[in-house]
Image 1 (tube, rainbow, N blue to C red):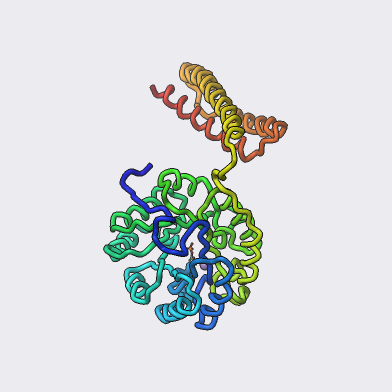
Image 2 (cartoon, helix red, strand yellow; image 1 turned 45 degrees about the horizontal axis):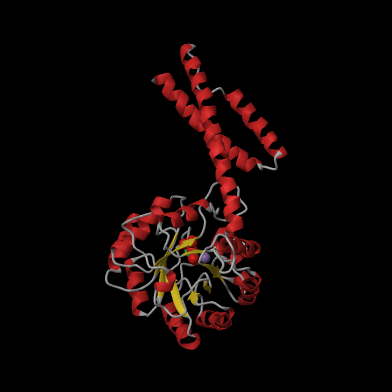
Length: 361
Ligand code: PEP
Ligand code: MN
């Protein structure tokens, strides 16, 4: 747990409509007054508490649509007046912060390119000193939990304690089903380190396509996320940015209705059965640790032999063979090649480290 970061739980933010599950929804970009206001009207009765619209858009390439700018803030004012929804937008520079605050935007968020930049984060945090506005911090594009915590910490040290995190996946060179790979372990680690921090999922930017939004949303809820941010557009195919991942307000409403909401610890449910199963799992974990320890003793013996005989630590053929054999054995036990690969790569790395120490010790 991070001792020096103090964040208020969602229910202590003191904002009426803000509660778990928190739904933030609206277009990737504000395009026209009509699009912004009509989308909000259609979303009003779906269960959404906060309306989102990007006013300043960080785009990968120049000469693409970079947002309508301050003019769009007037449209968010109309949304608030006509629907009562809270409004939110992304800020990436101090100028954006001042303009958003001046226009009465209720919540701001920091985008994934900005949270990766400590200089930008510090400037934004300094500009928010003394301001009591909730801020959501998207994960930095690179999968680095420390960088994400660092961005949150800078805001917290500037006096902001209504901070939330948005998981929007991570950039990758790898071929992937997703636009940004989720790497769920990273938001889970963030929550372990900052237990009070509200954590919501952005399935639109993770998936990058409409067909993935429902399943990603359900997965996030099953992992006890506090809410969702989903991009919604009245005519998604014609959206000026992120067209492939936006859905209509109607489709969004259908997804919300399809989601199953589970509780971490439902009242009136006995935990006894789960505790029994957990007890058994703990015993298996103890066994696993003992076995890995014994395996390492043999690894060390091999290390000593290699040292005496001037042999290299890595014997590629042996490693290929071992991985292949274990993946096959795993199949027989209904274990995927993913888990066998991950476990044995970690064990093999530790074996190499141990033998390298022995060779040079
Ligand atoms: C957005 O929410 O439209 C956006 C630009 O997201 P991200 O910072 O996650 O790329
Ligand atoms: Mn977008």
